[in-house]
Length: 457
Image (cartoon, rainbow, N blue to C red; front, top):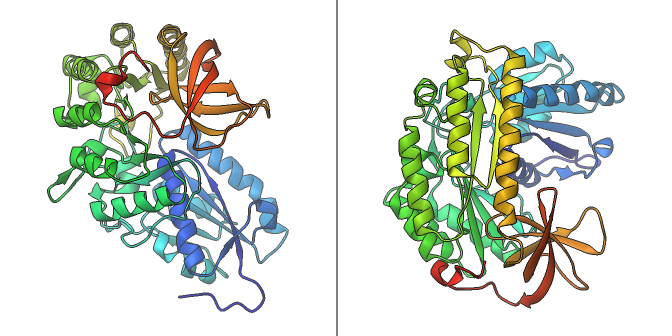
């Protein structure tokens, strides 16, 4: 159903909080609303409707969104025709309570209700609308997100999660895991490549458990890698319990699949891993790492680590630190336990005081910074292939790009364009960023096997 415009179509502005999945969903929302006749504003001041796309993974993410919603109350009061909507995971989790907390909100919509947004925006005139569907089936089949002309873009391959880790709110806010049809994934990737994307990241709460008929995740990667014009493929996130030898084989054999694996560890203590219901041990995790590094030359390995889980002792924490020392991750996303109402961990005994959680996080960050710096130093003097993404934010004479391992490189160049592939010599490290000098431009990415790449990257 399209709008019956009497003057001009309402202008929408979306603010997005959280992960790449939320950014992808914002593009999905834009596509749905544009099809219904809405237009989009680049600034909130000129919008008739503002949507806040929210995250619930940690309390801090919700606090940021709630703070922004409070600020927008004055924007809402300035014109009675303006509408303020909250969508996403926090909307799903809080529902009616969100309207009671912020009564100037016009509508609240969960992640499976975006098809109904055009009608909800039209109807939210006299009373707030709370729309939290929970059928566990929505994959937005037949709808592609608004095209992003960026060099690096995302494609969701599944929605929801079946793992129910005891600390995680995602299965409750996004529902059970359901795969998108692989044929739609291929169509969306091909469309984005035709519009200028050179790197695609496949997204899912657990990409390794993807299956559509006979197409599992390694087979999906193979199909995606066969698309002409696509030069780099990444994926997030891999759950250790579902990772397969076939995945490593396809990563090794396809030069398009980046040698970068993000493999959340969460804890180095078997006792805590069991309480988290992660379904693997530290020994099994180590075996996976050893296999991956043996098969994929120059593999970059990153992870997530959670400290301060209920009942975590100093000995448990030291086991985590010792495992980080042993594995030597290229980088790690570290965070402290944030109780999420509705999860099992929020009700567990032995909750650790926040100051202690913060102190352990500080120590963990300090440890990982040393490991990361050491790993990066191994690249100084080497020549790497860099996909140019954009001008540097600090200087108009510099450019920023990434290596296949996802390392950020800043370099000077008389002429460069987003989407170019350049051979860059790494000369120094500034903070966590490589500084390099361009050696030559590749008209096409280096199309060699990973064995041939070894020693070049």
